[in-house]
Image 1: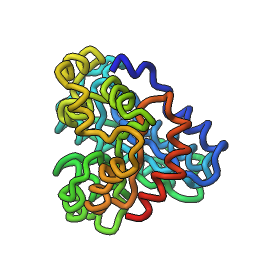
Image 2: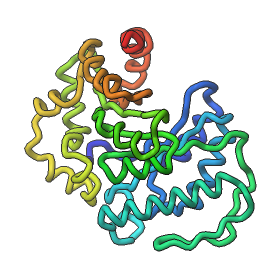
Image 3: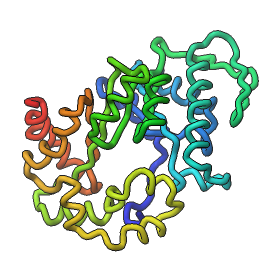
Image 4: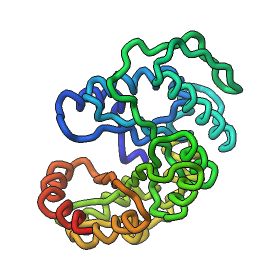
Length: 280
């Protein structure tokens, strides 16, 4: 959305966060290793982050969104092709993480010539794959160390497990809008996150902010408030997060909507929200 404004370059921000923190886990949530970024370059970035963070980094990968990837002038592939590209990219990245000599790869979508990561971390970078349906769950189950999802659907975990993911972590993402004034929180969520209810199949293919604006022109603040927990009520937020726990997710990442409330949100989350979540 235009209202969200610019987005900082995630890899630079992660590089700055690594030496400024000691315990918190760091993760891309998620990066696309196929169009803007070649998978060999993603592998190098991830290995460097693992070293800088003292083995606190996990590489979250996904098949991408047209909004972010079209800027390099490549055509936006159909979803089946995107999954093929992601599968090849994961093979290349995993091969480079192994560090057993130079990697040569000949695929339908990618070629790699004598690639090698000269600086490998002490611990191999775990790979997570974002899932939203059967194909992505099968890919994640076969090739990932963890599953990433934004919907608390137990079926995703079941398909992930059936494809080989049994016992591996499942990481969920929940968007919420904290503000001491609930109406203000709803306004912020509607302004910046009203696209959230469109679903992955729509969001992945929209090419620009104008497309998102058009697709969400009839989404009301009430619609957003029904889908996203807003305001200062701890119980409301816990009830929004609990379905991920019930669906078997082992971790939940919280996305606070609205930059102006970030500092206040962190303090409130530490004193009120996190203790309530731990009781789950």
